[in-house]
Length: 371
Image 1 (tube, rainbow, N blue to C red):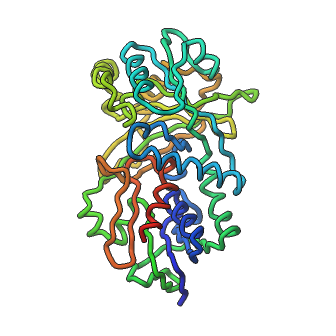
Image 2: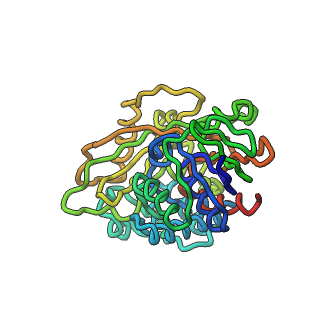
Image 3: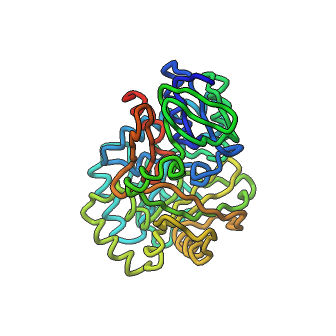
């Protein structure tokens, strides 16, 4: 029998964020991960803490708090984190209108740029028919494969968090947790294993009416001669998708035009971001498919649609694809997170809007403060 203050199930970004928040409160923490290392949605994403996507929403302050924690832990734990910002490019008048309306409504450090200024920000920008752009300095880039694997060791060294990889949790009967080899007693049990919590609480999963989202992404070989992208790039499909632009009066007209011009992209839920990691590889995507069961194979049709749209706003020197993959996360329409307390002493925490890298650290502080 082992006794602990807080037991956390799942070593993805949500679990790691809660381990940090708990350890900083002086609590004894154990972190369980059923695999040898985290291999789920937390390493299958762009690696973009993305506060601008939540500007003009109530979640913006949480996103900025998470950003500050990313910068702090990257410096202390020693993983790569770049303050490179994001550049939204407008090639049509409806896109120009959305960017102008956003810049007028937003209270933040956002800059409307001329086409020439956009080209100076990034050598990848397609300048043909480019009308203007909007630069946001608040966005970060990390390599999730690196960060998610460095953080557990740092938490163990710095705060004494006991990290148990290759340790599935068989049952939760609070205050007890059963693993194949050990029984633990914990005052608080936090289930942060993404949609996999269905295995521990199938009735809770069913009653929550959660669904899942499958996304497809691609990564190139490293770019030649140290070429750097600069800010993360996005264009019209992203303007139509993110909540920060939803309140702009011109957004409905933009969405209507995109549905006419890019119907297959809308059908696949595609919006295209282009980011670059520390190795010089370009990471881009993605799609959005919703359901409870997915085809295990990536669609090459969808990948080609992503590449087709990418070519309208970016022309990097090397688009040779090194890898393709998909990730799956929990989704609940209209909710940024879903939190349940199925039993005394147990809290299930789900990020349900695909912005775990953007919100997890701030969310964890709020959850721990409420325990």
